[in-house]
Amino acid sequence: MYKLIISWGFYFIKHLVFMIRSLKSFHFFFTHRNVKFTGARGLSIGTNSVIGDGSWVNINSPNEGVLKIGNHCSIGMNNFITVGGNIEIGNYFLSGINCSFITSSHLIDDPRIPHLKSGITTNNKIKISNNVFIGYGVNIIGNISIGEGSVIGACSLVTKSIPDFSIAIGNPAKIIKRFCFKKNKWVSIDEYDDNNQVPDLDYSLKQNFYQPLAAFRKNKNVY
Image 1: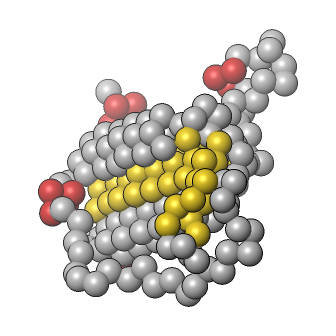
Image 2: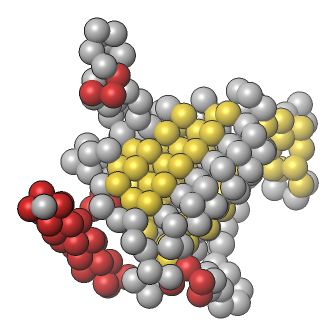
């Protein structure tokens, strides 16, 4: 019986610490009630951002890697984020349902050690720049950067970095178009001019935008 009391006490303290750490920005960022956090002390979320229902944020070791999510971001439902090395997501990010962001894996150096207890990798990092759209079911794995203004098509597997203002699709994802500011439209790779001049861009929203209030529901899945 005393073990059960101790375990519940430990859970309560962890939950309380998370809530206290979140007080300064609690009314600015939102998590739906079924979002699960592991290693929440390694999490930083910007103003007016939301993590969708059913998602799991797994920060294996906050001392080795952290998750930073910018302002005005929408992480879709049932997204899986597992952090070994840092994952950094810029402002105005949008992901669809069932996306994965993976910078850690289990060590497999010695198959005589159970993989469950072999430890995890922390050498990979994911960096996603401002105004990136990740479609339904996209998986981003390894040491990856995705450039500003880029779009990743549904069900793609991203294993190599994507430059600014690109559209990439497929398994593995390949760039099919780049945005040409001279022509003011997306063009094929063959038409793209490497001397494309990128203007200073302002992604500020023209009208006030607030994430849905339903996301204020109490989250009981923090530990």
